[in-house]
Length: 128
Image 1 (cartoon, rainbow, N blue to C red):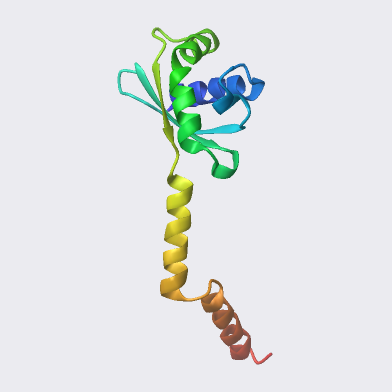
Image 2: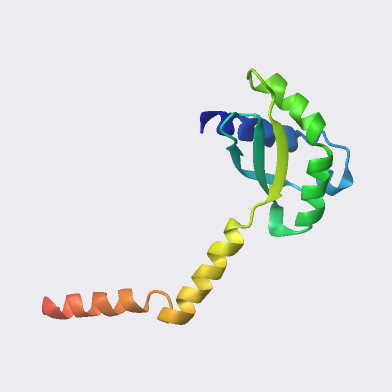
């Protein structure tokens, strides 16, 4: 976990500085949400999300194209025996969480309805 977090932090700083020339990643703020390292620490799966979720596929393709350059920059920033190969993926966890939230809302009704009902019965029990 520590190595993945160090790689994530280094990549976030690199992307924040805007050092890449590719227009698909240069003009879009990109968040590095997670880095998963392979057991041998030779491959880093990097999950990213462009701000606002726009042009995700284009940004991921641009980052994968720039991966060799970014690998060299990460190697300078994070002291490891081997610089990991970087493989960029679109982070879909936020979209999945939103989808689950909508399904739960549809299944259970409006959010907060159960909490409001519980609060009313609690005050009624105390005679207020």
